[in-house]
Image (cartoon, rainbow, N blue to C red; front, side, top):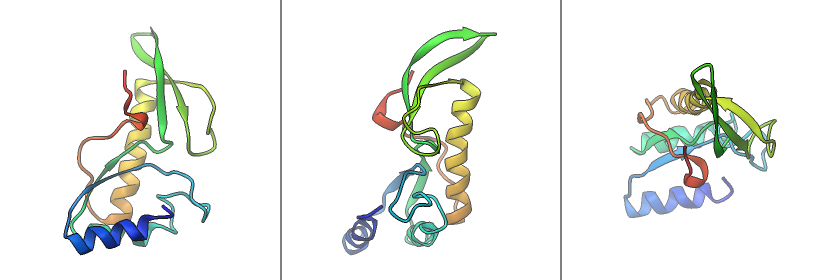
Length: 127
């Protein structure tokens, strides 16, 4: 987010509309890119006509599939944001979808605009 104001200036100057895929990544302000510090920045981008979608709440990298348990798919993931940064975790499909939903819900809350019904996987990798 350190260069976010510069990005906004270029987009405004060039009259370009984009889709921002956001996760709650660390910032020097300390409350994350989807925290209260950056909420006015996101709201201003919504007012300019930009779109939004989830990049997962914890910026959770997919690291591999695991054998399903009880019929539900499971994944090895590694968040790069939040309290579990750098830990290798096992998530169910439901847990991964919830992490996607958390970022989308926060974007809706701070922008007043419904996010697009898609997400971008951190690192571009999925099962």
